[in-house]
Image (cartoon, rainbow, N blue to C red; front, top):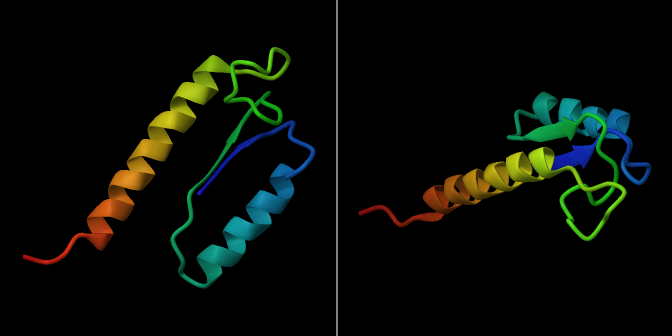
Amino acid sequence: MGLLGSLDRGIPPVKSRVFETCMNAFRKSVDIEIYDGAGHAFENPANKCSYRPEAAANAWFRTLKFFDQAKELKSPVS
């Protein structure tokens, strides 16, 4: 899972898309979301320059969904 800002210089979107393509080629599950206009730490409200509340809310929702799905995969079979 990758939740990234399109303006983040640490992990450029093109590298994330290359990673996604490689994972797909090996039939591995991958979930990459790149938020337009968001930079590094766009989820942190203390980051006054880059905080994007709508993107942060969506990223949090996706994170919780990811954990729910991972938990379901690890649940013992009854």
